Image (cartoon, rainbow, N blue to C red):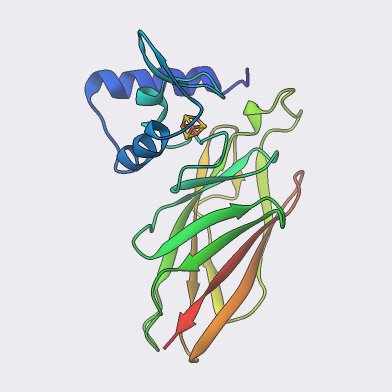
Amino acid sequence: MGKLRPKRIVDGFSKAISGTTPDFTESRKEICGKCEFKKETSLGNKCGVCGCFINEKTRVMEEYCPKGKWKDIQTFSGKGVSLQNQSPGYCNLKYSESTNKMNLVYKEPIKMDKPIVLKLLLVNHLGDLVPAPKNDTLEITSIKPSCPCISVTETDKRVIHEGDTAHLYIGHNAAQRGKFNKKVRIQFKNHPTLSINVSGEVV
Ligand code: SF4
């Protein structure tokens, strides 16, 4: 068991007891409800892959589906890092195992000169990896968009400790009409680079 899991289990149970239901919980529960890995037990439904109780697991923002089925949070396979989509009204987020990239797609065309900035949360759960890496702190060294039309606003922090999170704001300047497909590369001191594809259309 990773170092972080116990903390999140406690968090899930305390949220369930207090009736705290974050806005992403219902869609996660709906997906778990139809999942072939769901297991019914006398104490409640469990995820058959990670063994967590679904009612509690789905309330914890940093939790993720081990099969990548949830829509609000996606995990870079085997890298101990997830991205949560905090602008679900404006974009979809999906990890591609074959390209090892996140795909961030604007749902609707952006109006010329009316840029929409997308909000993401970077989650460090390196401590979940077994064995956990020696250095489980993420230290961002650079964030490089492939084109000046893409803006990445400074995160609120550059050092993200195990179990911690940081915001990323990714936007397009909407200065030129047409479809776009750009990349954002996030580099770390002691961790492989993460790539995010950003695509959409300006009309
Ligand atoms: S967390 Fe994922 S794998 Fe587990 S029951 Fe839910 S949808 Fe299925």
